[in-house]
Length: 143
Length: 162
Image (cartoon, rainbow over all chains, first blue to last red):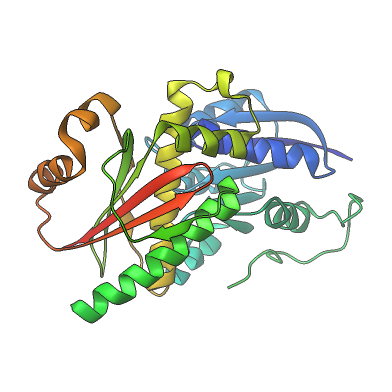
């Protein structure tokens, strides 16, 4: 199984790092779409279907929380799993994201292994890159 | 407040090392002496149960090493935009990591990071820019400065809490 991924971050460097990690993580990626903030992400989703969204929180124009809210209000987009990348790790902020429907967190700074682990858990593939049908929701959360 | 500043400095040192080791593969050694030989800076403000500003000052060599290590690109491919983007991201990570370690139960608001032009910085020096920025931002609290050395060059991180 191959995936389409949307990476949302106002930092070109961070998008490049995430993209590089995904490309070497063993996932079969069909398309990797990039956006600089939540608004650009929503625009990109009008032309592209993606299987998972990896989004920063602190961005200009539309932040990660606002993007999550917009996705959940859209019947076509509400089931796309969203992984939030954050420098902040307050329990309250993470609980807010969980309540809004985020499926996982990547805390900056991160190692490639940490990113791979969350991606595998959220997308539902095992360490050999095989798709797992039977899995519970929100397994990626680790408070 | 003195006890609080000690906790702030210890936590900051942990966060700075973690960010540079994990994201840039650069290992920092604490320095006792201070230098004003820096080319650029990135700064971010934070508000919450603790409020203030964090500034990161670097040489151009250090900035290039960070980008090369993080993105695995050659030095002649690095642009000015890459440097600004990378340094803003670095100060953002240091700030978020520090606040999470300092008080994970509280929510903090972070500003968008700001990058300072090298020409302005060279003209005014570290202390000059610090005084100027403090006046502009209204900060007048406690300041802690940390200098580090590495194989790639030196950095200085200044945290000012109000």
